[in-house]
Length: 153
Image 1 (tube, rainbow, N blue to C red):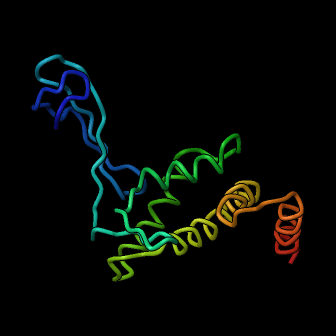
Image 2 (image 1 turned 180 degrees about the vertical axis):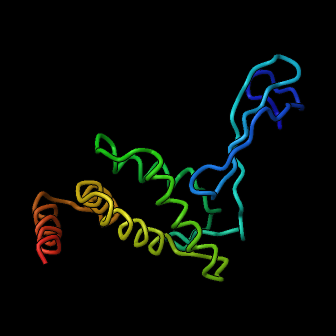
């Protein structure tokens, strides 16, 4: 593993342990050249996923991009990063085990909405506002009203 500080090619693993409910291995490493310590994560990747965007453009699935999107929706909410990681890991696992090499961005958005709905209603509405492209305040009102009705049912 290349050192992020000095770019030396070799580092020693000092400690390894499971993280994220066993979905990844966290490794503490030390650079052999400069002695700096850093952490890496190793995850199982079942298949390469390609995301098909709405304009039919294709790009590789990026877990970090999904984490950023969910984190923005959850900002200043009582949701720790571990819960976000679990949500994203679950979505990624669903996509990888679906048997499809290509997945639409719409499908990813639906899975995120489904996950956030059970996690936090404010984060759910925030994500929906971007995903569903709310244009006016009445869009928020209508959507928030539907969330309240579901919560009462």
